[in-house]
Each structure stands twice: as structure tokens, then as C-alpha cells.
Image (cartoon, rainbow over all chains, first blue to last red; front, side, top):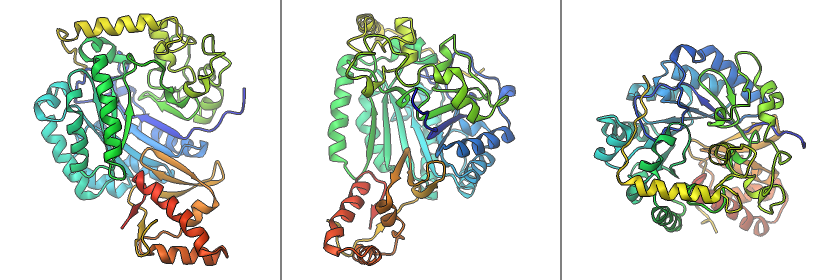
Length: 362
Length: 91
């Protein structure tokens, strides 16, 4: 295998606790209890190790990271380590005073999630009454303090029609960027595939709308777009390659190549409680399992697109094709592609009747 | 071409950073890390939120003993491309 490059970015999942109950939650079915979360000191050490290893960008996520009472201390530690520090939040749990403390601690950027573009839909999708009103208040404070802002919206069958409104809201709030992701199915979200999966027509419409908006809003708003997996012909370049650019640290300290990696049962993920981040990045067999392309099977191995999509997503290959080293079944060349398409059609047919199954942190 | 009197600004949330592990300069921005070559670093390190485009070109021309008319289009293109991605602002 060629030389392993150092990681550029780290996602710190500070906690699985969250006041919202989004049906598309991509966290695993089994959530970590608060007692198992890393301490402030653990995280500070991990941030310092990450910077030393080559990480430049840190994303503080969860769960809802604002449920950590030591969030300001964590931001201070991250900045002291020299990391560009981004907070990914629903806004719930942030007060004006807390935002001012985060500002003083050196927080670089805020990414605010939207569940829907009006109170009725947002509160229904997030399963949290009053959430939208609170979020709008938080967005106002973010603007007043002057944090650079990115909005992110997970779009699906039930809110895709509000995409134009999301783009307007981003401009009204002074956001520089918006991330529009058609729902991806991992973790809890798998339970809600029928209720959430957009139709093929919806997915195509969204793509066209984004292409148009990108042109119209050039220089004003940057739009990042994640298309619908199940209706695609070629897979996404998942994580920019397994163990290649980024790593995730779960609330209990387990280090993962991606958010969903724990669904692959034969991999053993090491923890920052026992080892240094450097040792884990370079030596954990789980990180080396799907690095490069030696692990690839046909049709990937001889495919001219393998350098483009790197075979797609390992977790999805396992979930649909039953083998994490298989081609991502989104790909038209995958033997399981027909199965995936049939699943998408079945989910779409059931969609109008399907109920949302909420994700609640108990 | 960037207007002569326009002032390029590195906005809040964007900063130059010495990437010691990879021995290079980078520009850190929301969800983006841009590796800089020597020229890129020379331009960005002279953007201070007060210097206008004309003066910036003057300084680069002097420091690198290069003709103004040769570097101006390149510097303009560099700044405009970053502005389009909302990484720089031009006031």
C-alpha cells in the first residue's frame, strides 16, 4: 500500500444526547450513555493529538453538542491546539450568553441545521415543539455576534418541496454557505426509509433546482449538494476514501473511519482511552481494511471509475449487498443494483402511508 | 478584473495557517482547506483589509521584482475565484 497521508479533518461526536427526535438520525441504533462519554480532559488531549497528527479542521457534533456543559472549554481546548473549530448544532440549548462565551473561546464557524422551513413542519420532523422558533432566535444571535454561518438541511420526501425556501432563508440569515443533503440512510434512518425516501422525480427536480440556484447565486451563496443515493447510477465518493482524509471520534472514544463504520461487524475499532490517535490512524487494522484499492472486488477492481468514486460506501455495500468489500449497490455495475432500485420503488410505493418513527434519546 | 480601488478582505472565519505537519501554508475556511503555493501565500499575507488592489499589486511587483501588468491579471483572477466561493470578500 502507498504511504498513508495524515488526516485533514476530525468529527468529534461529543455526545449522543439530543433534544430533537429526527427520524433521519444517522447515529447507531444503540446510543452511548452519558456516563460513557469522554471527559473534558480526554477531549482536550485528543484535540492536541489530532493537531499534531495533521488534522486542521475540527467539527464538533453529536447528538447535540450544546448538551455538553463543557462546550466552551472544549472549544477553547480545540483552538489552543490550533484547530479550525466548527460547531454543528440544531441551536437548541444555545443562549445568547453561551454564544458570546463560545465567541470569546475562539469558535471559528457555526453550522446550523434546519429540519423544515416553517414552524409546523420543522417541529413535526424534529419532534420538538417550539424548536423552530428557538432556532430562529439563535440564528439572529449568531448573526449579531458575527459568526460565519453555514445552514444545513436534510431533505426528504416530506420537506423537499421547501428547498427554494431553504435557499431564501440562508440569504436572509446572511449565511455564506448551505449544505443541502438528500437524506442518506444509515443508523436510525433505516427505520424510516419508506416515510423519507424521495421519489425519483423529486430527486431529479432537486438536482435541477440546485444547478439553477448555483448559477443564480454565484458569489452570494455557496451550495453544497448531496444527491439521493437510492436513485443514483454511480455511488458517492464516500468520506473521500476510507481512512484517507477524515476520522470520527464517537462519544465513548472509539475512533471510526466514518459515522456508520460500526455496522461492519468484523472490524475492531480502537479507542482513544487506550491508544494515541496516531497509533489508531496508522495501525488499526480497521482503518487499513479499505484503504487504497487492494481490497476491491469486481466490478470495482477493473473499473475505469474506481479512482473517481473509490467503490462508494462500504457500509451501504454491507447493508444492501451483504458484503462490505462489494461495490456500493448504488452503482449500475453492481449485481445488487437491481435489488436497490426495487427497494427504492417499494419504499416509494409505501411512502404516502408510512408513519415517522422518531428517534428519542432515552 | 478587480477594480483598482477595491479592497480585498479576508472575512471572519477564514484564516492563514501554517500547516507544520505538511510543511506548507493553508487557508482555512468553513469546510474548506486550501493549500497555498508561494504566490498564493504572498498575495494573502498582504491582504490586511485596508490595502486596495492597486497598492497590493504595487507591493507584490516591488517585492518580487515583477512587472505590474504581468502579475495584475493573475492576482485579480486568484482573488476573484476565492470571492466567488465566498472565501474572500471584495469591499
